[in-house]
Image (tube, rainbow, N blue to C red; front, side, top):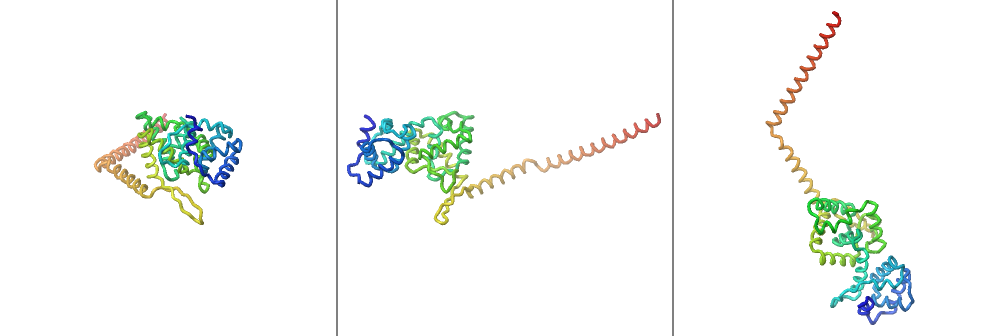
Length: 299
């Protein structure tokens, strides 16, 4: 079955004129090439859904210079009974993106970000998953290590490229209030990639979810609206900070009892004896120098 024949099942019979015109305007503005009739068919197949058409236009422009022959590369997905046809259309386009990005760091990052319902701060994300990768690389080379591998090969500059590429592809939300360090997926993208990981790799899903929870135990992202605009700040979770402070205090107390009082007294006596020996040696050296000086005068 071809992609186009599958798409015909996604058609709805009563698109309003306004819906059609809005969809056609979106495709034309995105630089999608095709006859008006062909573009109208695409709008109908994708339910005039803004999300689906926007992602489709980005996909065609990125890999097929905006030509509609790229529609033939869209994967055939099984239709879920009772599912919203527009949602099915979005999933089909996201599956096409997934196929293009197989084995890439872009896909790994997308999948990790899908595990969070809130924006993820970039630097803590790097720290948590890099430490996990290093630890598991040394102890066990399992499926989770292979999953994280593409991210482990990224330099700081390449991280920037990956993030900007995902934003250009509209798979990653634009920066909120200028905060480029906070990474967030659109809900439809998040749901798709989260479901894919949970279904295809349940063990990787479990490990990655645990690491994401670890990240947010240490980092809390707050949204405070002032004058109608969000001011996004990243701070240390006070509960987790108190726990870490208690652990540091416990370590300090542990170190304090590593030396018993008798051991400290003995060490003090040894230091005193060494100091006295050094003083005696210094005095002996002075007497020896004086004797040599006197001997030189007599000769």
